[in-house]
Image 1 (tube, rainbow, N blue to C red):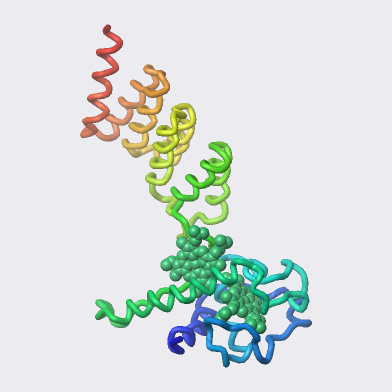
Image 2 (image 1 turned 90 degrees about the horizontal axis):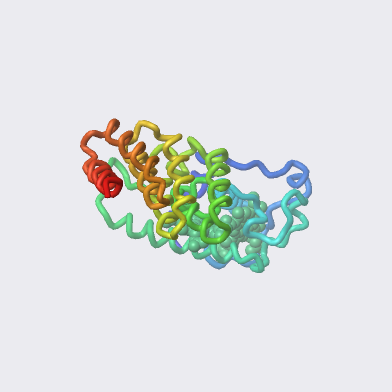
Length: 256
Ligand code: HEC
Ligand code: HEC
């Protein structure tokens, strides 16, 4: 294992937000002199060298030690079994270390276009989340498991917790728009209307979000609403040919 890559974890702890250990736990617990079960990090590291990577992990994923170790959040660290591999996230994290080593190995092979090579870290992907997903993927996963109400609640919670932190793209219309289309494809036009309405509230100046809303109304058979929002879309974006075509289609059908 390259010393260089892991040596740099010291820098993570200094530059990243470091989660302080609970103070009562700090009193009663010390880093072990000799770790018993290092499989990826250098085996001869004294426990004190683990401080930087372990704190780096917690802040990169926005979790406590118990996310990867056997122990209970809030309980003193002396009650934890850090050498145990029983918590499946520990082996996941080991594989992530190997992956990062490999990624950084590839990065070292290219001539950097900036003044020095860019390294990848845990937080480059994780940005304070245990599972780094796009906003679209988050909504899709919750929708498949628990339905639309849960997905929309999840959206509100993520926005509350992560807005402005760079972990999810709340600043663009595309996540809700493409999620809305997957709801529409799932033959739930009424559900898609709810998603597109929320997107229209957030991005009222975008012709595209009103076009999507109009399409869902059309699929749901609410032609008057479809007409209204296609017109709104054209007002905002006069080049929207799709909306013009759809309006024509609605007029023709009404004429029949
Ligand atoms: C993202 C997962 C993750 C988090 C969070 C995490 N650890 Fe670890 N920890 C690991 C992994 C993986 C290893 C084993 C590394 C190896 O095999 O080289 C480890 C090893 C250790 C060891 C060495 C145990 C031994 O005897 O072999 C200690 C001590 C430890 N961690 C303490 C902590 C503390 C304290 C925290 C909270 C501040 C923490 N860890 C947070 C993943 C994590
Ligand atoms: C290239 C991007 C990337 C990097 C770098 C990365 N991860 Fe991950 N990590 C992921 C993805 C994606 C998942 C979700 C995998 C899944 O559940 O399908 C994940 C999942 C995990 C999990 C499982 C969490 C859970 O609750 O399911 C742990 C633990 C973890 N990563 C730790 C780390 C650590 C520690 C580092 C740095 C050594 C790291 N990751 C670096 C992309 C990355």
